[in-house]
Image (tube, rainbow, N blue to C red; front, side, top):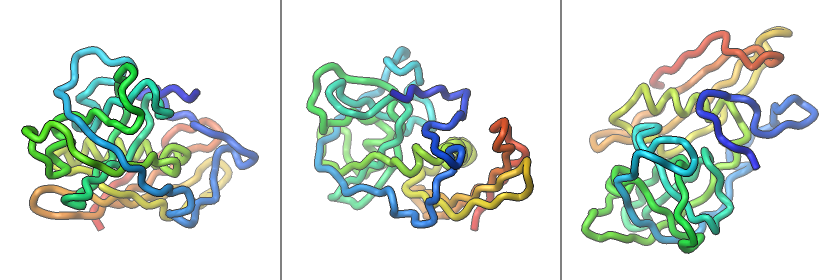
Length: 207
């Protein structure tokens, strides 16, 4: 099990390339959507994951204890009625609920275009293994979410990775953000020391 620590960005997975995955195809690790249902909650002050419901601008979710999803994992949720999509982070669990039912924070439920009076809606969802395995993609996701508090990240794309020198690796990602008024694309660039995993520089900008 890979437990989540919001203050540590160590590799979630490793291989012979020190955790650097050949992901030039952004759809390489995408999975088909699963059918499920979503309810909503205002959350609480304590969670089973130790991650607050307010994390990532309340783009958070609780999953069933019967589901395979883990604390800190990101899940992409889609409302087929409105075609709206949101990326959420697992922060809590619900004992013995159906494995395909997600308990979304109220703000996520509304961002998907659902009325709170509905109580429960049909959804499609998929885990985001590409983002999970690309540690700096997840790190930049959190930075972008905090930098654009009135926008929700609806999609992402790994652009490229280059070795600047022995002590510096550069990775670039693009994120699609949606607000009630517009959709924008933000490019995030991080340069880090692959030996220590320390950030050398960080840049985000609209493109």
